[in-house]
Length: 309
Image (cartoon, rainbow, N blue to C red; front, top):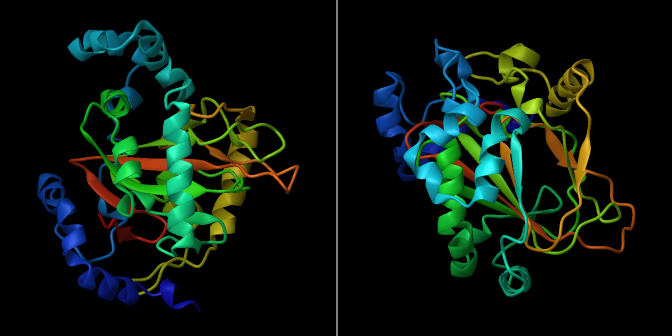
């Protein structure tokens, strides 16, 4: 059995990274969680399974305009925000200009060549924001963070970046199983096209409205967990269960054929993935940024680990 299956391995790792767990301290007090910061944590630790982000409990088409800050956005962005509850995503066309995208691509190339950034899980370049002030500045763009903060009605903090040089070809999934919050729904993601994307180079695919599915948590697909070990099911079995749910509810898959600089924002529970690459010679340079709301409990449901920030 993989050592990562044993919870004490995580506890030891967390102990060595204790400073990066302090972000949860106030939230644990707020929600009355009586556990050490280094301990395993998952949805079973929260008796209230119904708490949600504000636009998950109401309709953005009705609620958004009631907030004073809504008037600060352009009419185009206002319309996208009002459709959030229905769609679970929005597209910001030409958000980053050509020069900014090219500069980010050059920065990634330099980091890879200097071995300051390496591939994990085959094709992912993780946490470039910790290595590059240019990328850190881009992901903290004030307008982008204002939009994300309005959607969650909380200040947002960039948790991680993931850069891709080729399409991810990842199966359909929801971020909420990987980067989870209590209350649920306080994660949001932004995908940045760093070059044009079409059907040939493995575009992002998604299921509009799928964010309305019940949150799929460990208790919904896994079993055999103990105090010392994680459940017996593999991640692929989570993907199988999610595929069945999407099919049962009749959601229709769409692909995002993007222009360089476009940004795709999605809800924590929106089902999405990477389409097959039709032309293997093509790149699909892109960057995903995951943002947490600042004052909620942040953890990883599938591995029962508190998030390191």
